[in-house]
Amino acid sequence: SEPTQGVLIASMQDQGKTLMTVEILLALNLKRVLLVGIKDTFAQWNSRALAQSDGEQGILNIDTTKQGQANLAAYQSGADGWFFIGHSLLTRRDYEQYQVRNKDGEMVNKSRRVGFWESMPKPDAVVVDEVHLIANYDSKGRETLHSLSADWKIALSGTFYGNKFAKAWAATAWLWP
Image (cartoon, rainbow, N blue to C red; front, side, top):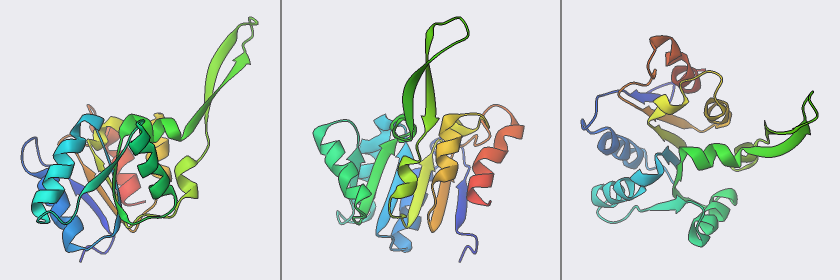
C-alpha cells in the first residue's frame, strides 16, 4: 500500500533486511527484479529467496562468467526473473574508458557514462543492498543508480547516509525524487 513505491529498510546489521526485502518482493508477486549488492552476497540472497519461496524463486547472477553474461543477455532482452549484480559491475557497465592527452602532453584515462541500463526494459523493482556505498554525491555509482527506474525501488543499509548524514540525499532522492 506504499503510494510512492519507494522503500528504505535502514535497520542495523543482522536485523533481517534481506528477509524483509524478499518477503516484500514475493508479496508483490514481482516478475522482473534487479538486485544490486556486494558481489559476495549473491549466494545469501539466492538461498534466502529459495527458502522463502519454497524453492520457487531463485536468483540469476550477472557477473563476468560465461553464465553471468548469458544472464545479463536475458535481463537485457526483458526476460522475467530475479537478477543479481554487484555494485561495481553495475557501475562499470554504465561507463566507458577512453584516453585523452593532458596539458603536459601525457595520455590520461577518462571515463564517461554511456547509459547502459537505461536502454533496457524497466524491471518491476530495483533493490539496492548496502546503498550507503553510493552515498557520495559525486560518485559514478550514484549517477548510475539515479538512472535506474522501476515501479518499485527498495534500498537497504543500516547507515544509508554513509559516514555523514548530509549524504542521506543520494539514497532518498533516488527513492523519492
